[in-house]
Image 1 (cartoon, rainbow, N blue to C red):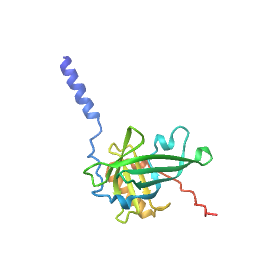
Image 2 (cartoon, rainbow, N blue to C red):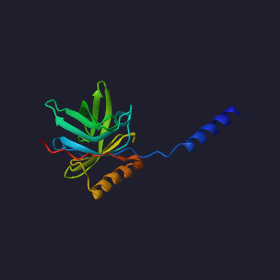
Image 3 (tube, helix red, strand yellow):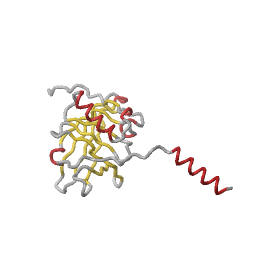
Image 4 (cartoon, rainbow, N blue to C red):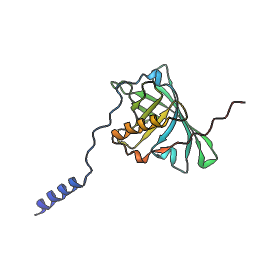
Length: 182
């Protein structure tokens, strides 16, 4: 009787589990030198390091610079809207996972901890990119400019949705007007 009950419970639990999604796929190749430079965050999934501990990042940018050792210096900047637009800067490093065409990177802001940075969508002219994680918990839409035309944004969102990301979680990232240099 116990065995039958155990089998029934396991079968019931299997039925209650959500269907498995196929693994997240990256783009085939990223020209790492073309990817370097400044990217503006257009939208993101809320996350603890940008939206936690009373922080609310706006005006977010990510800067990438190739180092002589082949790794990448990562500089993320934002303005904390919850603290009078105080600048917040996080610096880290990344390396491309071998055999992935530079589409999968491992990023660290606190050694020895690394996170996944997978390029799942990329405009052929490198005007915008869609970056996510294999567990679908993180998602960013990036652009070379502070604004992304609606059609291109829709294309980027469509790529994420086709990969099984819950795009209803996307929140736009305000990019305040840039002040002219004095």
